[in-house]
Each structure stands twice: as structure tokens, then as C-alpha cells.
Amino acid sequence: MRKSPKSQSRRAAASKPTRSPKAAEVGTDREPRNARRKRETRERLLDAALRLMAERGMAGVTINEITEAADVGFGSFYNYFESKEAIYDAIINPNASVTMGFETTQLATKDGGIGMGIVRSETEDELVLALPGGVTTSFRKTDIAKRDKLTTSMMPSGLNQALTQDDLVNLVEYLATLKKK
Image (tube, rainbow, N blue to C red; front, top):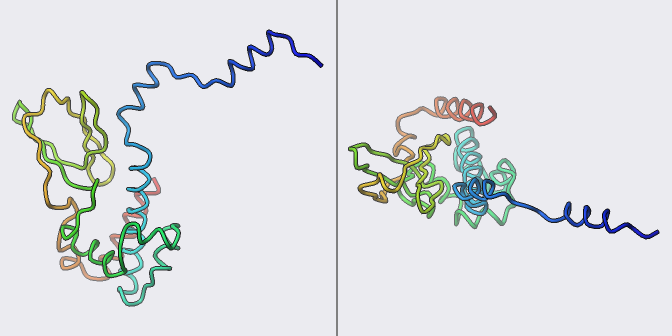
């Protein structure tokens, strides 16, 4: 059965993805997919390790258990950490090794304001910083007087010394409930 030229042109038009100029603009201020996926995987590994190690201690947890709890392939663990000790150190001493893409950026604006966070996206005109928890703040680049990368993590150092093991378990459980919302 032969198709009419009209139905062929409708089908061809339907199969071609179209992007309006507005849609193109929306995509420019978002974090690139690869960077977002890498950040999310690292966060899942850290969350799983923190939860498991808070419950059982470092010696009572295996890398396999961490990757299972994080829903990450065993081999992928080594793309982010070289050992179980390295992930433990990243939890306990976050300033020891700030991973590329997780550096804290501090801004001074021309009107005397300040901003701090992890660069979530950047365009020619705008910089978006994110705080832990995902809250973002946008800055027009023309308003920025100074921009510095800090050598410290936004995660507080010494968290393990300020909390008992029970407090740490409770904190991890509470933070896990916030992620589900």
C-alpha cells in the first residue's frame, strides 16, 4: 500500500526533533549530564559509606557492601576512591582531598555581597552556585567583583569528633529522609 505524500511529510516532521530557541536557552544553565551523573554517583557512594560505617565502623564494612548500598557497580568505586580507607578519609576529613568539580567557590559582588558554593553551571552571562542540599544562587557575571576557588571543602571538618556514633547514625538517617522528599 502506497502512502500519500501528505502522510509521509507528517511522519517526517514528527520524527525530527525540534528545539525552540527558548528550549535551547533553558539547557545552557544546567549542569552538564556527565558532571551531574559523576557528582550523584560520588554522593551515593559517600552516603552509603557514611551510613554503613556509622553503623558498623570502617572495619565492619566492605567495598562490595558500599557499592551495593549505593547501587553502583563494584568497579565504579575505583573511579572515585582508591580504597576503603580513602572513602573513609573523604568522610572524616573532607578537606584532605577535594575532588575536581567539588571545589568551593567564593564570590565578592560589586555591591559588597558575598556568595559561596560549588559551581553548578556557568554561561557567558551567569554563574550558578549550589550549597549542600541543592539550594542554588545565580549571579550575573557583570555583578561579580572577585572570584576565588577555596582549598577547603564545604563539608565541616571534624564532624566525627563532634558527634557520638549514635548521633552520627541518627544524623545520617535524618538526612536520608530529606533526600526522599
